[in-house]
Image (cartoon, rainbow over all chains, first blue to last red):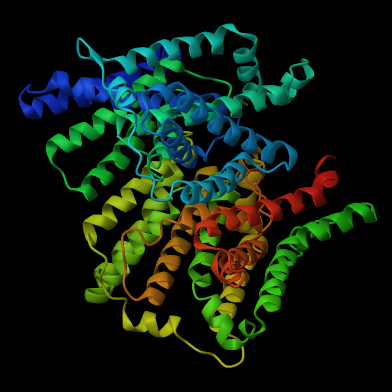
Length: 316
Length: 324
């Protein structure tokens, strides 16, 4: 028993990968081994979008209880429209478009933080209110927007190297960097310290508010980047393009072993959680279940996984 | 409303005044919204006008009350919206055709909620994630039950929701009743104090010999009860159901509780405030914005802005009070 507990504590992310492997096996067992590789390739591509926002959400959640960014879906939607409009279908403007999407995301993050800091609104309500406002901006800005992404950009999101999508490789590098930032830099360690005990962090002389500001801005920027990538991958912007990433971004963080109470983050787990969620949907699609049953099973399996993984023992 | 100001120990008059102001803030914001509506369209302030404007206030108030019980225990229910939708679907189909089955299923739903509370307590799970997962379960069930919008609310339910009492419009009477039930149940009974204590200081309640497991299960069961009532009220008004009908209620209910003076941690909630918050949101959501001629594109944004303004006012008022 203590052995298992010790192993769990050592590698909280292992279960998300085990889960991802199991659903993949179940899916290819159903197809009789057919399409297993293609399934993985597609899963890696789709996981990228969840991982990018998942990492942002993870940093925010790690800041401590109550910290969460509910504005990601609206942020993604707006950034996808901004990116497509700025790129205007022209390959030469891809960099500018990406920059614009990032900038739009940073603005959202800054706005979130200002609401939280200046008005002292709880982050859940602050990001929620912000998301209402962003959604309206997106609706009126992106109305009837039918701009296709530049062909080069759209192709870029689909390049594969021996079955591994290029964006997945780049995202792997990015998560590696995020891991280093989290565990080896003053910034990352400050985030962890604030999440463990904000008062102690403040007394220890950490610049709590600048760190929180930076974290919400980074999360916003990642949402913006994700919007641009999604618009490239799915060939166009859409107000609802980010909707599923509210649940997904929080779920992958928690399934991956990051503590919702804050102060304990886990980067590999975000990948594991994202692969698990995407492969779970793939599996249910292969089984050919109806939309209702798919939702039902997705929800039930998420609850089951969380229950099996268990919560953190309350520190008293 | 005086619920928050109640434990007035021997404190300076300034703190008391601030507490009073803070406790009155939900009512003040409601008055402000009403005043704005009266200014923009005086004819709306009438029996008929209130009946129309507060049409959907009853289910929103019930959903907010449901959310309040979870928040009292330091949790959050992100599934209440889809749960309300699922209850609508059951009410419009099984409860009408085979009332016994319908009643049993609805009771079963409340049981599921109690079990969720127990599970969250026993395994020390994050309620946000569990309920987020459950929101998919409820929505999936609703779609399985009613793939296309349809069904028909039981006649007795439509009759109840369509009651036109003399002088005071039905939604207002219902809101007062809901607030009274919540207030006496949670703020005035001894077990209500235990329930709030479970959110305020779980360790103390545990040491005093009360079962936290039972408290958590009870809070979630109450959420289930009010969720069921909200769904039934909603379908009584709309008469037919749709699997997505309640989706907006998750955010509305959380906003209503916070607007009504509740806090995410510490078991600090106010049933009366929650109902007032729900009414404010119901009025601000569309009647006010329509009268202000705000284009539909920006109505969502205006909702967000109203939330921000009210919360900012509350924070400004209570800033000093909370620092002690």
